[in-house]
Length: 211
Ligand code: GAR
Image 1 (cartoon, helix red, strand yellow):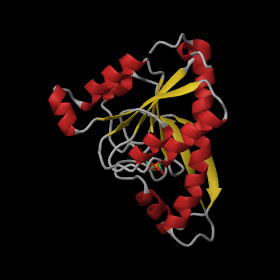
Image 2 (tube, protein in one colour):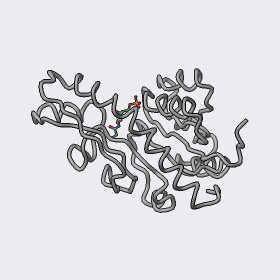
Image 3 (cartoon, helix red, strand yellow):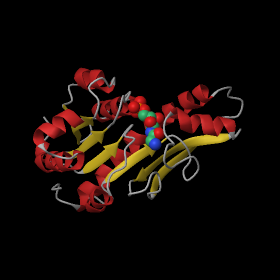
Image 4 (tube, helix red, strand yellow):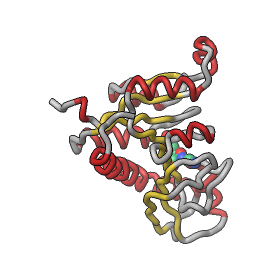
C-alpha cells in the first residue's frame, strides 16, 4: 500500500468537450509504472465531455466547474479551483485539452507549477486559436516536413511559457491533417506522462509536499 502522504499530487484541467486521451495516458502510465503520483482530481467544464467516461472507468474523481455550478457557489472558475487545490494539497497543475487562458494572478501564484501540452513544435503554430486540429491543419497547409510535441510551463500568454521538453516527428508523405494528428498524438501519450514523472522526482526531492 502506497503512503498517500508522500504522494506527488497532480490535478488535470480540461475544458469544453474534451476527449481526454492524454488524461487516460497519464493515469495508465502512473498505474503501469507504480509511480508515487496521484491524480487527485480532474476538472471539466462541460457535463457532456467524453473525458467523463474515462474518469469514471479509471475511478478518478472529477469536478464540473461550469457556469451553473459556479454561480450557485458565487465563485469564479479560478476561485473554486484555488479552494480545490488547497483542499487536495496539489503539487502540479496539468493542462490536457484545456483551451482557456488562466489569469496572470493565478499563473504567477502557481509559477512553475502549471504545465501544458501542445501538439506542435512551439513557438511555431502556437497562440490564440491554435489548438487541436487547427494546429495540424496549419502544419499540413504549410507543407512542413516535421511536426512534434511541446510540453511547457504555463504563463499568462497562450503557448509562450518556458519549454520543458519537445519531440520532433517526421510527417513527410502524410496526406492529411488527421494523419499528422494521429502520429503526433502517439508521441503526446508517451511524452506527457514522462515529463510529469520527471517533474515529480525533482520536486519531491526539493519540497515537503505542501502546496
Ligand atoms: C491534444 O492533442 C493536445 O495537445 C491539444 O488538445 C488535444 C487534447 O486531446 N492541446 C492543444 O491544442 C493546446 N493548445 P485529449 O483531450 O485527447 O488529450
